[in-house]
Length: 254
Length: 92
Image 1 (cartoon, rainbow over the protein chains, first blue to last red):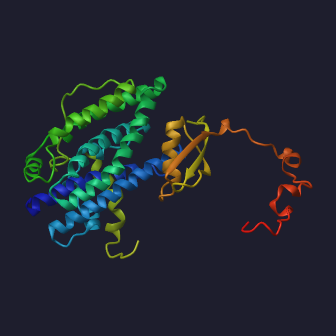
Image 2 (cartoon, rainbow over the protein chains, first blue to last red; image 1 turned 90 degrees about the vertical axis):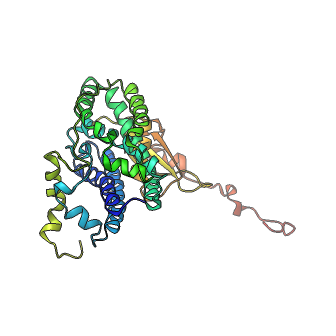
Image 3 (tube, rainbow over the protein chains, first blue to last red; image 1 turned 180 degrees about the vertical axis):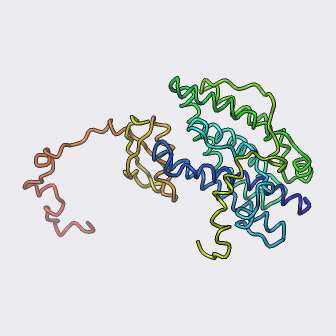
């Protein structure tokens, strides 16, 4: 079994991805283009925050320092977050929001499928539950990719622009670092490079139907999951997300 | 997105029951209407099955047809209570 400190960091990676993307989507409350789609996106946001709760609670227990899910979500600063850069980027226009959600969800589908077979039983159970939700996220965001890409000239152009802008953030998902390798060796997590073919297949099928061009793999951004260098956007999310808890640290009920 | 058509949503709560009309929504096409129906009307485990139907496909009766459509008049013979059951018939 993996050492506590490593497992803790790994659980933060998983939990922070869900927390930050959930927070991003929650920004659309009252601002989505249609009320029906707003409900859909907020359902997804709440799914993600639910996943974050399970993962961060577990992380707090593994750490054994008395921190719970709320302490980890609301009282860590930028450098202690371990999410991929892709989830912290701003929503942008609707095409950009959907495109990011699709690229991340397609990755999470592969990741949770593998994690559902983890040697860590608690993580496997969380992943099995999250997988059911994430499959719907892929379906819904993928359906929108097709409608936007194969829609009007304007929607096609916006979807392609979003895809081109986001592509450089997809490399981090599949580039293993020392922690990924340690987790794979311990049988806790998957070899992230091995998740790529499944992701490629899913993404390529949707892009083909959406008549969108898959960007070339070029320079890839990194630094989120190892905490080396987040984008400037993460601090702004945290400012909004953590303000209340930090302003009223003694509050016991919300 | 302003011209999304209206869809009527029917949900079957459990196996063996009928689909019931639960409401309506706007969606660009059938597949998306199905997904949005799931998100709007099945958030608390309400359903086992969803139907969505374009509202434009529904042919509805008009309010002014009420008298000729729905007034029962004097047709009591259409009700079972109208018939006297002979004593020989048991267990009706």
